[in-house]
Length: 286
Length: 278
Image (cartoon, rainbow over all chains, first blue to last red; front, top):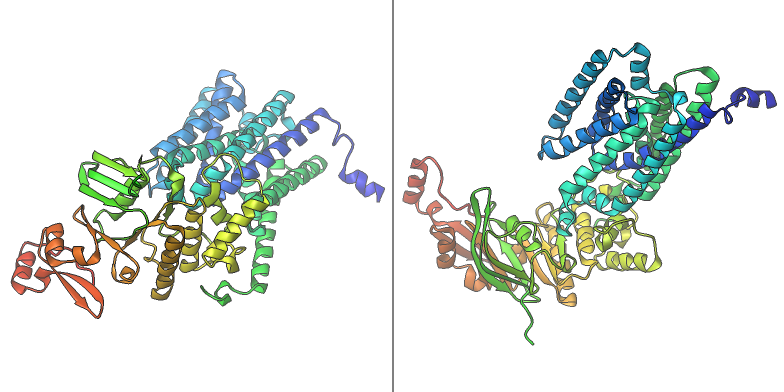
């Protein structure tokens, strides 16, 4: 028994500095991604959540080119994209401006990487993340920024929830819908730029969508849905770090896989529950 | 001290992107009145509601709501939208949605408290929605959703209730139930009601005034005074007939009855009838 234990939790898992950085930053981004993911789901904005981390990678490439911090490059680029999407967007054409901005960002990323003569390992790290390569300065930045984002979500929680469910009513109560729209997109952008260095531009999306969607199926109220989402996200990244350290499998792959498994499981639980419960139409109608 | 009218419009024009949507609105609505806002599609009903809510501003003229300029005292106006979109899995229970009416526009999140829960529960009871208080809103019928929206709008004890075509997604029976509910609540709370509808007939028993909109112009008064051929013909700018059949009222474009005028309309390539509602 002790041997299995020793095999799973190998020496250094909780003591090596690079692993401590990994635990802390992965937990921070898991929490913030799950919470913001709830609103992504609520507003049906998966495409925006998909486009922002991907496009933000050009920001990291630009930072690499000029020798700035990649977190800064990611944030600046992602926020610029978010503002572009928030303002360009007209009713009924959600997808088009988002897609065009994504294409533009990816094209710039290509340009920056070529001009900067980036080597394959750096590009690879940007696309797939390097959880075990998070520096202590990056860990501190990621943790503080996640805490700030969490506070902002807490502050706009009610108006964001109201404007996402009954927008006309929210407007009648004086909630500025455009401002809420831009606030939401910028929140997604900043959360994405924290996630990209850890799980990579290509897989950051999975951490934002998977756990939130699992929580969606498990809970009946917004608070519970977020709590489940956070639990799923934290367990996914924690299990991924342990397995990744034991087996050297890529952490991004593991995170994406566990998020998907959790989503599938939640969906299964949801539908087996609703098969047992009476259908809504059997309730006495009013 | 005289009580300020619920809504007072003084020569209000609304121009949106170069088009005059509402012109020369000049009327006042007394406190406690039940007003049916009636008119064909495109007459400016929704614009009128948005004007009262302060979401758009008049290009000229003044408007006062409860004696204040528009945009102030938003919590004293209860707004009931047509419906809301929600997928069946949305993790939001009926009582969560209604609770947002209490303080959904405020910063932060609501801490659960007994008095808060009690206020929400009382309102759910009042609109007859307690049976599905814990159900996800996406599984509810149109009539059930409408009750929740009414409860949501009433939680701030508003003095005015604006309902934007609440009947448009409902079958006849649920529609009648919603009208009765609004009427009862309006009486017991002395709320001024503006009830927007395409057809005035379901409201004849409960409304004491009609605000008839057509071509961006409005006439306000009792049904007997307003729904007359001369008044409505002037409003539409075209001859209109009013038929009263078995206590129901039909407003019909005259040219759809007189063949000659009708032919003229067709000859010009577009029917000139002021959209009769039958």
